[in-house]
Picture 1 (tube, helix red, strand yellow):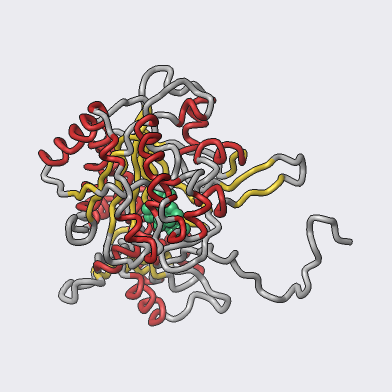
Picture 2 (picture 1 turned 180 degrees about the vertical axis):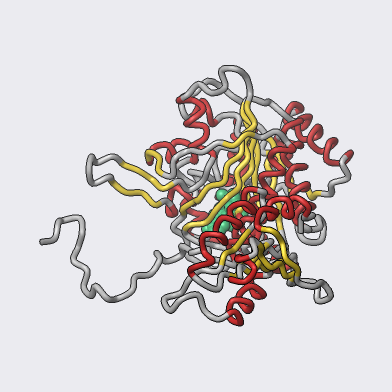
Length: 442
Ligand code: ATP
Ligand code: MG
């Protein structure tokens, strides 16, 4: 019998595949992710950003209201579906900010003052998969909630630079910063009128996307990557010319901090970001090394979003960084992942040796050592020769050999694997924890 929501599977022995554009992350690649994530966690601790986690699935209305209806994401990239159990309209999160803001409002989480938060999330966008562009990808996301800036805007940009340095990237060479101000709503409105006028005068040069956006979201036309429209876009009126003294002062204050910190950047008047919620500071970190998928990190201020989602007016600023793109960039630059290997490989010749071996391994692990124990195969433990091969391949610094003769003496043989001059020696089973304590970290 088959139920309505589970269509019959044609061939039960046919292997299934991951959904297009969604990737498995397996060893050894996963070690690179863990290395990257450890750098990020350390960075967040240094900047005193606290971790936050929100659901993968949110009400569709959150993103429609939060991101704006005429955005790439809401128009054509969201994974939206109806919950077949109750008819709820749901969406797999296409970005992290809206969910975090929803959570802050729902829990009145800023009651005791502003919060600086970060999260690592899986993000879903129905785009055409290609290198650096996937349908499930991952972001590091940072949000400072309740700070009017511009100090925190600058802090968040400098945070990125600190991460580049931690990862072995060179700013200027591998990544560079572009900065702009989107001003405030009334300034964008005046600019928008001028933009529409400009594009209306050249309507025959606009592509279909641009024509559709001409009256709904003309600012997004500036973001167009269509080469045929570049000249027209270049000649468009610039928002900068419509900014009032307060908006200009905010931008100047951010720039003053970046200048004092010796961080180079380019003011890009065409940088508008893809979402409706931004105002004042916006920025992107760009690399030349990944072709058209060149934006590795983007962010900015979104002072209106809390109100738009039904909360109290709350200034906020944040950024999102694509982890896959960052790892591609690190590959392109040739940054290696530090090798990770166990400290000890335990060679276990027979069933008889297992209890003592397991006990010693547990004692070593309790001391903080990484221990890989040889595991029994279908045909037994395998020859000593094959076990030593495994020990070598594991990259471990030491092999501990739980041979019958040593065990009978209450001892285990200790063999340094990385130092050809060091001799094998015996160690009392009761002394393995002490020995672990004397080991300097690898
Ligand atoms: P793009 O212009 O490349 O589509 P975006 O403006 O849509 O990027 P954001 O919404 O700002 O991207 O997301 C922040 C970061 O997430 C991007 O800078 C990028 O590194 C990464 N990113 C965005 N879309 C994808 C994707 N489909 N696959 C992998 N990474 C992505
Ligand atoms: Mg996009």
